[in-house]
Image (cartoon, rainbow over all chains, first blue to last red; front, side):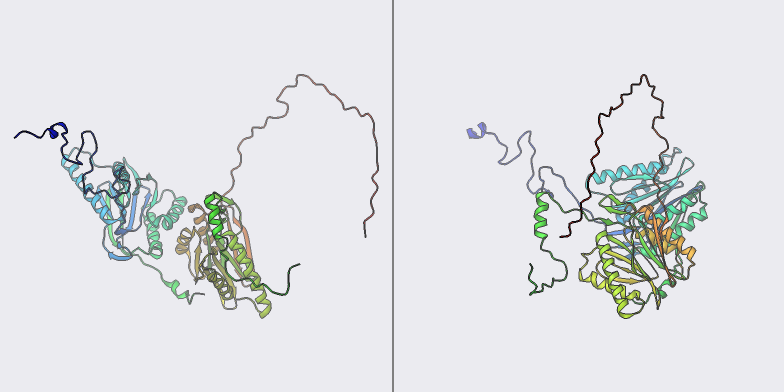
Length: 262
Length: 276
């Protein structure tokens, strides 16, 4: 009938329970790292379906992006019609290297952004530099949480009448230049693009297209994860045109000169 | 005096006796010195009259340039030259040893050395060392069966192809070669293509740099052009901070001559040679 005097003197809620003013570790909580005091959850990522290089080149009056249409599942050429270059709006194009799933996730978010802008109908549209900055923030934030979006993005467009080309990678390194290549393109195609632009800094659209096609051909020869089916996106003051399913002519005559291995 | 009764034939291959000691020393704070590498761009291809080899001239030690103008085109035989990428010491010794073996072979057979002989000797040696000799080579030469270019990897595999590039700048060089090579090129355009390929490596790869060396091997002769192009010139100092003579005013002058007190002349006789 009367209360236990011990419980009145020593009122603990339950044994091994939370104490006021202290952190409480719930039993069975999902703590993956060994440094349990920090409580950081690390999700290491490795990309699953990936896209290879994207090339970007500024010419006189606009920007051109080129990339192939392959989604590699490791070393398997699984998806041969992936559009890795997308039109954002009439003045911006986005190209992606790396994990296709992460790219599609961001693509959905960006498309929704564009729709929201359309709905607002206030005359403002997303500019390429703004998209580039936004992407940098998103990617750096994700990397700081040890959960990166495993991509390298190329943002191309016309910003205030001038051509703009910018790049962000999965750890948030961002820069802009008149010629950018991601993935293997940085080692193979960028030397060719740099030499071409040094010889002629203000290229015409046809010259830029010829240079990019040459680079795409060399990449198809030398990159194991490349396909002979490309997209070329051109952004000028008039607007955006994306050509799909471009197949390059390749020259395998050199095979006739190879006999044996000594 | 050492005993000459028992001849000690040394065991072939590498000796790993010192590895444990080296590991111990590294833990104590005395790590092994870094190997001087030739992070490199080398390339070779066949043109109408023969073979052309090219190389840059930078040797790196970690991230520092150890040698601004090193020589990566090595002589193997009068008709065979070799460009090398990898560990500088390994390349130098391997090519010297091979070159002497090829000369002995030439004297033994009395014939011009074939490129395939050099390839075979090199790959057999490199395979024996299982890749521990860091030598990646572009061997080029012309023999009785025509011009040949062969790339040899540190583990001992070889590829005989019309055009090859090796080294850290090989992707850049190969991009130019893939774009520009065609069969039966003239010498002038071959030189330009090789220069473009090596310069692609020099300007786009951090471990390659300085100048372009070329070696052109034809039936008549082997021509070494060093440097073919001085691609990177050290900047000239624009101004001088030297004060011109006379800009500091002289307030007063005092000349104190050294007084000669006495002069002594002592001849030293020439000692005769000790022929004991």
